Length: 186
Image 1 (tube, one colour):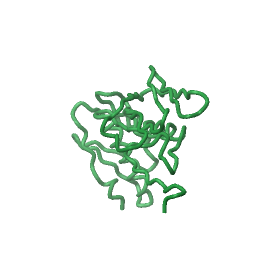
Image 2 (cartoon, rainbow, N blue to C red):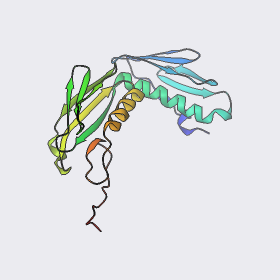
Image 3 (cartoon, rainbow, N blue to C red):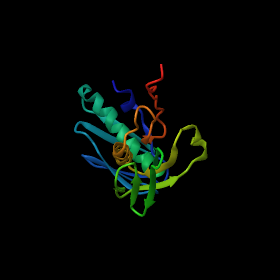
Image 4 (cartoon, rainbow, N blue to C red):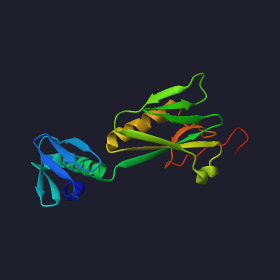
C-alpha cells in the first residue's frame, strides 16, 4: 500500500487542474506546469481535493510517484521552489548576467553557465555564512519546476565539486560537508 499515494492533495484557490489520460495540466499564479501520469493511475477532483487512484496493487510505487509529481506541480505554481548553492574558495566567484551565470572556479578560463527558461538566479554574499572558511557567494536559484531546478543545481555542482580537505568548490548550502584532516591531522 502506498501511504503517499492515498493522501488527498488540497488544490488552493486560484489553481486550476485539467485532467487528461496521460497528463495533468496545472495553472496557477506563477505559471503553467504539465505533469505526466503513469499508465494505470487516474486522478479525480472532488471540489478542492485531488485524489490519485490506481488500477491494481502492482502499481503502488507509481501511485506514490504520480501523487508526488502532482503535488509538486501544485506547490510550484502557487509558491515556487528555491535552492541555494555556495561558492567557496579563494578567487572563486559567480556573477549573474541576464540569462547566464559566469563562474570563476580556478580554471584557466571563466565558465559561462546558461540558465534554462523558467529558472532565475540571484547572487549575494550572506554575512551569516562566515563560519565557512573562504566563503565567497551564495547563489539562490528559483523556479516553478522542481525537477528542472534540481537538475540545474546538480549541473552547477559538477562544475567544481567541493574538495575533501578544504571544501572549495560549488556546493549545496543545506548540505554539511565533513572535511578530511590533512597530513598532520590525526
